[in-house]
Image (tube, rainbow, N blue to C red; front, side, top):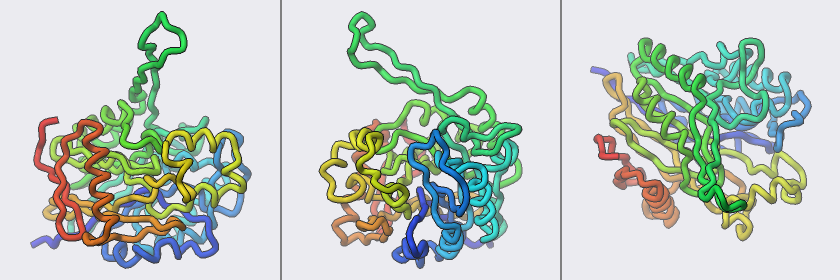
Length: 376
């Protein structure tokens, strides 16, 4: 009889502090209890390189952060991030090297597009889980090609439609669409991987950062197409705040797992708060300006996705509410804590806001996601 095992997934991680391991002190025990742990690496982990001219916030942490990530319990890391080429090719390759030296499986990035699209396959208790990683948030030339390193792209295209075409200056309606060729390649990768594994986990760096609840049109298009092609769970990140959870054909879509163990942007750039571009970004979240912290209050609420696997399939999906302290260190919160209910209500509100009918049930210190097929 096959034994159940636990698959955990988090959002963005990345440290730029004297002791990188310290960021995991509040969650290390829980992560290490997972049989398989996935995370998204936001910054480079390197000691070399020069900031790329197209990077708005070059993010780089100490290479010893790779050891801290491994020690925390992670097994698979996506490096398909909008910061992967922030410090040039040297830093890009050093990051991948230090991760691999810690025996971490790296997805979503590589020396060329073929390597960036290559899956990681992990076998536990006779069940094979395959991971693929892609990125929509792409500064110029950050995505891999046949002869260029970078991350695997899943680009989005934007069209601004004037609501009143004869009234200059009036608001526009925003439409986004998946890049046709990128989506075709993504779906081909899923179908090929589906033949080799029992479970396909798709990681995507995407979405509208800092604006509460709102999803871009292309996200639903890509997510639904990916599940139709054979994906079993979608692990989204990048937005630095939580986004809705959707159930489509019995499969769970985490549109954003938010920050998990990520130092604030001020840790990666001096005098960031005085920079014009940062001031503009702060306007995206109406509460940021009034926050006494380095990020908007929304950015301190997060979750840890927990999946129970049995018989070659995901049988149960839930999340554990997590609160980041003022120094961005994650801490699990229990049902009796005030923050627990705040996070649960926040997830319900943003999901309902986007007209998604997912049902959640509190079960002890976890929140179970009802995966029975629902009318969408």
